[in-house]
Length: 322
Image (cartoon, rainbow, N blue to C red):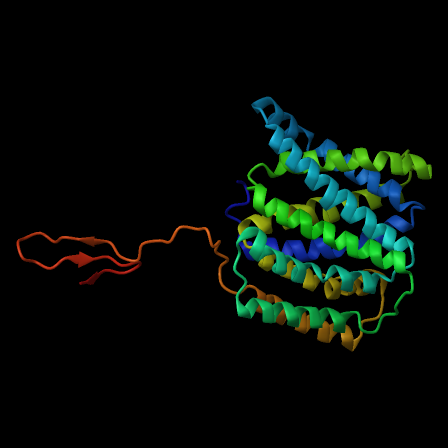
């Protein structure tokens, strides 16, 4: 796996930065006149870019189970998650409220990871998840609310779709074929967005630098960076540890908005960022171990040379005498 030697911390930082860039990308896309058009060509662009990986995998031979897995991940983790997230904003749900609902993802993943994946969530991780959620409350504390019930439902459904995709990927995908897997998921998502774009009359790309920049941003940061880093972190660490990083995205998103668009920073945001950092640190917990994993032996005893000599025992990791 090409990213096996990259430190996990580097991947986690990349995930937080890339996942937080979605808000900036939405602002850039809204300036083009149609967010749906940008979304469609974002997924088409990545599907074409990664098509050599998919073609190579098909030539080597893929199973129906592999095709079904990545079709489901494309439908649930990309089309449903992104589509309903955008629709919630279109229905008037403030970005801060949407970020708060998205921040329920780590808690939902932690609740379901035990019974579905056999992952143990230790006490420090539950405390960290609670502190992280408190940090998100601080980050969006000064933002306004919305009475759009349908917008809330779309946002909750978007969050639930990402949780479902996370659990499915962790249970069924090793991540070894990341390029081919993402290509398949992007292709499925692009095909599903075609009728949506046709219905809204925004299928054809807009010949402008603004549209090209919006698509390039969405491909580089929100898609390759966001989903790529997310699945890499998920395969290298546990479900709870990876999902807890989502807590950092609301305050970092507001930092993006301050740096690029001059949106004001509040004390709520700074306090929330500190709480989120503390929550993520605690959520790292112990290394996640499946309940079904075989136990490792604690000692290996080898008889020493010579009659009557004691046996030398090699408990892991140092040598002792028993």
